[in-house]
Length: 260
Length: 248
Ligand SMILES: Nc1ncnc2c1ncn2[C@@H]1O[C@H](COP(=O)(O)OP(=O)(O)OP(=O)(O)O)[C@@H](O)[C@H]1O
Ligand SMILES: [Mg+2]
Image (cartoon, rainbow over all chains, first blue to last red; front, side):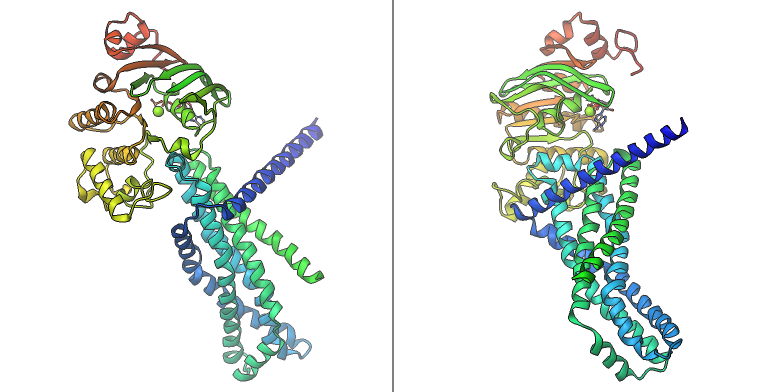
């Protein structure tokens, strides 16, 4: 009895998850189609770039700065065990560019942007503003979803790139002031061993994470249940789903880059 | 012009509409009355394709438009939502001029603004309101901005969901006159939902009462006053006692 109930629950949960994945995939497909078919809303797009890209810069920059600084200390501690302290500059750079820059940047953007997109669109849904858009011959997917998804996909890689630089700078600050590296040597070691694809793969990850963040925000907002509680739940789901999807996607992309 | 037959709509187990038949002629002003929660707003949303009916057929100018919402179709409609549904990310005048600033019938910025200010004047709002944001307005002012937005592009068919709730009696009079003018002077077709009996008398060519998911009664205002239908009589006189249960 208990076993069958448990199995039934598990089955129902699995079905629910599959159905949600299907709906999300259709939503993503519709977003892509609407991205390439007119009318376009350049004004909304620029506004979204401002909101998502520019205004996320402080939080992504600070995250990168502290991560780079801590990374330098950790790698120094590890490297010292086999007298390889000199790897600090290059490992900090590679670690930031390939992994920590995009992942931590993506997660910070998820917290900041997925929530605000879900709350904004969710509130529009429950106050009938989405219905009003439709009656004014404006497709909510084109007007609300596409500009945000496009802006996030294009600006998050830029944020990641800036984050890389700031993160490396954080490592350099700690390296020079705390670990007695020579400034010029630190920088030389950083750039001698850093390959273009280290940075490139991180930027590709950034684009994927930006897409995920805005898509999750828009999807949960558009499907928000009624009332303030509905919007609250949509916001929470958007952040959780975006964060988990970023980490899963990060592993998949890393595996792909690793095997290539 | 608009024809509905056998419209049904349920939300989960709750059957809201159970077969509504209704037709509206071109240039006619129909008022829908009925208890709170009987599905009046849902019915208007069905016509606009915002809610897909479970059964039934909706025709517009003879063509089947059930559950569909093409741009050409929607371009002929204006809708005032019950909660105004203003876009709170943009100032009042851009709300009113929303349709004029986008799409095929697009006007230059300055002209769109001029039209918006003129429409605001028609709903009793001064030009100083134009640059405020919706959150800075009172409920009744928001309602009137919503009304100005609904009529801004001079649509052929206009739906008003409770246009006078939350307005003082004088403003309600202004809005009633405006709706009447739109129908008689501009030749628009209007469907208005209202609980305000003075509004019904001022606006209606024909009154329809929705009760229990069906069209219970329809007729002119004069017929409404003299009807012996106990449901209509209870409703228009606002009696707590009668066939319509007070708890719904
Ligand atoms: N999207 C929805 N999801 C679930 N239930 C809904 C939805 N929209 C409307 N309903 C339900 O349908 C019923 C009719 O709602 P509707 O808004 O049409 O009432 P109404 O006749 O306009 O009432 P009022 O005069 O109070 O505005 C209500 O019981 C409401 O709970
Ligand atoms: Mg209603």
